[in-house]
Every structure is written in structure tokens, then in C-alpha cells.
Length: 429
Image 1 (cartoon, one colour):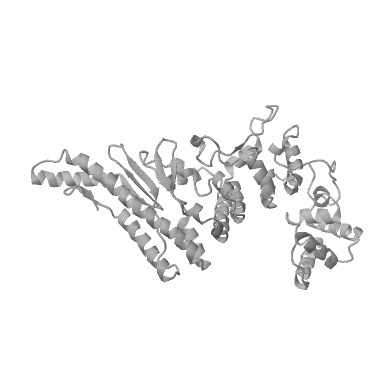
Image 2 (cartoon, one colour):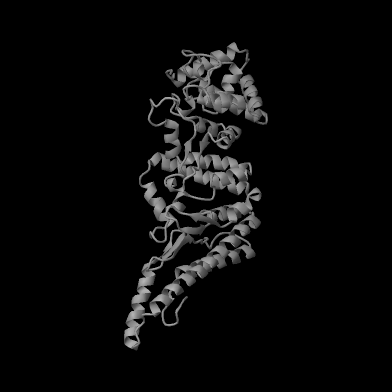
């Protein structure tokens, strides 16, 4: 481990190394930096980079993590040497670290690191970061795909009973010794839900449907904790999980969710069917319910902002069908409940009215609608329903055809939430 120098020391050392390497000026180094990163060269870009470099050299600005791989390659030094201002050097050019492996595009290097004695891949480095975090920072999608597809790491585990705060994330790399009871990489994967979401954003940008499916892109762990018989919606299950979490991790998750939405919207023409489909989830209690991507309305809104009406309509048509089917399924369940109660309905009119009011209250006490979901539980707990219920803001800018879909969607939403049992006629409307 080495001590991190302050910005002034790093800046002075950076200036010295740039001169020693033969760069004639900051502008000359900036030009090489832009060539290496693939940024189109222009006088404006060169001057901007030269100014930023000058701020680093003066100690007014620190070196950013995305600068390190380029700076160290151009100057022929290690990140340890640069960040310690020359006090510390890498022990060996062949020494693999989370950082260096995450930068590599060589599969043989990845494999060697995974199989290295002592299992360093399971550790955090001196900055408290693991290989997954570095690979995400560098957008090394090939490495992340390799680790996932080879089964070294997994964000979705095999046992659905583990799906609570996350999808049972873990690793299949085992330590030869048991000196460390729980590896820090496993802990971080379990606690930090943003890691899976950030990888999903990279997969969406590349249109990688296999990875999206493998990582359950359109699901949330709360689907597996929601239960009609247990009287819990996904929103309630998720809220309970969040109260146990770390505030910093919660903010990281929220940011990653927004970035994922942006990535899906940007690449939606490659992914329309996946995010518009309904799917079944068998929860940890053995119930089977049907859900859709919970942030479908927000995704549709983003597409409309981008003037991609066709993509938004694909989502809205599926959502309308889902809301309509939900209403019809809810009707059937309520009618079954009413039919069971009618067998015990009194003969006398006055008694019937009291009984009907009691039955209606009983049925409605087992029904809730809000926060994007609807739940109904048969009072005898023999059957139930829990699923998404979608609504769009009515002031979203859209063309005539899309506006009609939004109105139809919201109409079904209102009918579901406003459903009432009619005991006299044995129906629910």
C-alpha cells in the first residue's frame, strides 16, 4: 500500500515527467492525450485539455480516474508512481491488480487473475474498490461479460428464495484457505445494487438482449417478495428493504436506475419487445403472478421527449392490454368471492341489505390500488392477484394517436382502482 500525495505534489511530479518524456508543451501533451482517447482533435479541444492539465499541474484540480490510464501510458509510469508523486513504484510490471486487469483487453490476463493463488480478485484494493467497479468505470464490457458468462461472478443467483435486497448476487471463486470468513467482493456485490444496474446500462447500449435477460433487466427483487396472500405489493416489499440500507448506496442505486432508463431509451429500437412484454414470476411463497417492467411509464415518457412516438406506442399498447387484462382478472376473482358469499345470503330483504354491505366491505378490505400496483386477496385466502397497474401523466406531449392510447391506459387504471362488488347481481364493476 502507498500514501497518496496531495494535488500540489502530484502536479509538480506530472510536470516533471511530461518534460522528461519529451513533450514540448502542455498543448503537445494534450494533443497526444486526445489522440489516445479517440476524441476528435480541434483547436478548441486541445486548448480545453491544455487548460485542464495546467490546473492539475498547479494543484488546483486532482487527476480524474479516467485520466490515469492515459497519463500512465503516455508517460510510461505506473499509477502508483504518479499518485505517490514518485515515492512508490509498482513492485513488478507483471503484478496484476484490480485496476490493471480492469484496464486490460486481454482474456489471458483476465483468466490468469481469476486463477491467481491467494484469489486477489476477491479483495478490495487500497482505494476500497473491486474489479467490477473499475471495469464499470472503464466501461470494459468485454471483461464484465467474460466474468459473467464464464460463471466467475453472478448478479442473479439460482435460488429465488435469495431474491430480497438483490437477486442473490455472488461469486463462484472460492478461497483455498478459510482465513477470511466472508470476502469483500461478495459483500459489495450483495450490498451495492448499482453494480448490476450499471452493467445493464452497458448491455442496453450494446443491444445485448442475452445479458439483459440473464441479469433480469426488467425485474426488481421485490417482485419475488410480493404476495397476494401475504398482503404485500412490490412497492411495499421494496420500501421495507430500503429502510435497512445505507443512504450512500441508496443514492447510487437511484442514479444507476436513471442512467439505465436513459440507456434503454437511447437504444430502444434494438430492444422494444423485451421491455414491452409481460412475464411470470413465481415468488418465494410459491405464488405465480404476472408483471411488466415497473418503470414502463417513465421509459415511454423519455421516448416521447425524444420524439420517438413509435417506440412509446409499442410500450403503451402493451400497457393498455395489461391494465385491461388486470381489470378482467380482478372481476373474475371478485365474482368468485361474491358467488361463495351468496350461498349464505339471507332470504329477508332487510337482512340481505346488511349482509351485502358486510360482504362488500369484506371484499374491499382485501383490495388495494396505488404506487403502481394492484392487489386483491380472496377473503378465504384461496386465491389472489398482485401485478403492475400503469398510469401516464396526461400532460405529456404526444401526437393524437399516442394521446388516445394514454387516455385508454388511464381509463383502465381508473376502472381497476374504482372497481366495486355488486352483491345483488353477483358481479364486480
